[in-house]
Every structure is written in C-alpha cells, then in structure tokens.
Image (tube, rainbow, N blue to C red):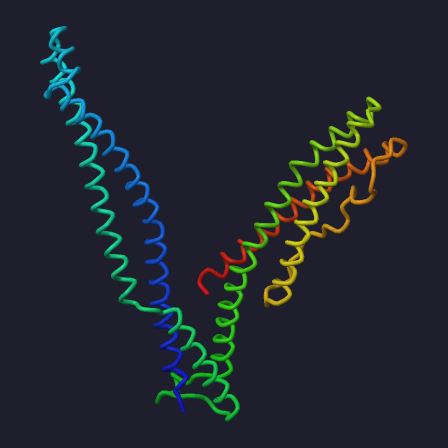
Length: 311
C-alpha cells in the first residue's frame, strides 16, 4: 500500500512546482503586451526613418527637390539638415530594436523554463487524487501510516481532509472562471439598460407635459426597446443561475429582473400617462439598483477567485 507520508510529500513538491510554473506563466503573459507594443512602435519608427531617408535621397538624386534647393542656394544646408533627421530616426529605430531583442531573450528564457516544467497542474491534481484514494483506503483499513519513527506517524483522516479541501478549492476556482464572464456579461447588459431608461423617461415626461401623443407613442416604442434589453439581460441571469446551481460555489445572490416596473402595457394611452410616467421613474431607480447588485456580484466572484488563487 502506498505510503501516505511519501504521497503527501510528492503533492507538496508538485505544489511548489505548480506555483513556480504559474509565476512563470504570469510573467510571460505580462511580457507579451510589451513585446506587441514595441513591435508596433518599431514599425512606426521604421516608417518615419524611411520617410526621412527618402528626403535625403531626393536631395542627392536628380529631381525637383534638389533643383529647387540649388536654385535658392540651400542645397548643402538642406542636405545636412535632412541627413541629421535621418540619422536621428535611425537611432530611434536601433533603440527600439535593442529593446525588442532584450524582451525576446527574456521571452525565450521564460518559454524554456515553462517547457522544462511540463504540465505540473495535471501532475499535481493526479498526485492529489492518488493521495485522497490512499488516505481513504488507509482509513477504511484502520491504523496510521508510519515511516519508521513515532514522530513521522501520519493520520489518514487528517491527510484526507487536507487533500479533499485542496481538490474542492481547485474545483471552485475552475467554476469561478466559468461563472465570472457570465456575471460580467450581465453587468454589460444592465449598463445598456441603465443608460437608456433615463433617456426614455425624459422623453415620456416631456411628451406627457406637452400633451403630445405622437411624441408619447415614439417614446413608448423606446420603452418597448428597453423591455427587450431587460429580457436579454434576464436571459443572462438564467444562464448565470444555471451555472451557479451546477457548481459547488457558496451561495451567491443573483439580481432578479422579473419585477421590471415598466414591463406592463401594450400601447400608449394618454389617459394613463401619469401612471406610465410614475412607472418609468420607478424603472430608473430599478435599473440603478440592479446594476449595483450585478456589479457587487462580480466583485464577490473576483474576491472569491483571489482567495482561491493558490488552488
């Protein structure tokens, strides 16, 4: 039977490797935008150098630019000036090329270190599973695992509890990575609703105050468009609830969009305009409240992911 002490040591060793692998991957991910930015800057500086060099070539070749400079007596002065500008542009190109070369060396080093470590994430989870199975088997048989001395006695229940907690944290981290983009999509949908409702509310209020039925109909159509946006956001809420229900994440409050205040009514009736205005005013406050709730949900998930960062 596998020795729990050795299995746990392997898990801890792989945990250290996995932490190093993650740090290397993060460093590589942070490096890539710098490389991309410098590549774009290099292309821009190369174009600027090509333009400056073209000016130099025109003053040395046969053409209109040289002829004009000869006629006004500024040929030598222009040549010196354009050459200096071209040399300065060339120096800027060389500067960015040197910086890119340094970044490329760093990227190669990180890629090599990451490749040498292989896939410690999978190895770690497999070792953790082996430890859980061995601890359960040891627990069923009774007794403790020893490595020769009393000080090194390993309690199967303690090991099992620790390993299962780690597995649960790994699972929860993966679930947060699935749920978080959906929560952010909900925030984006509610932001659109939150931006649009005050515009529609102001239009309806103005139409009612001026007894303008045509304007009222126009803005009521706008309200129907808002309802469609709310319906789209509600679809995201349903998706989010399904993902949370299928996960082992702690209970997280999801905003309810079914009580949208301006959701009723199928046509604009000037006689009920005051009621419509009141409901639209409620809708403005409703949108702000639901957006704040969705943003709080995202913050809660981000905080949970931060707490599971080492999982």
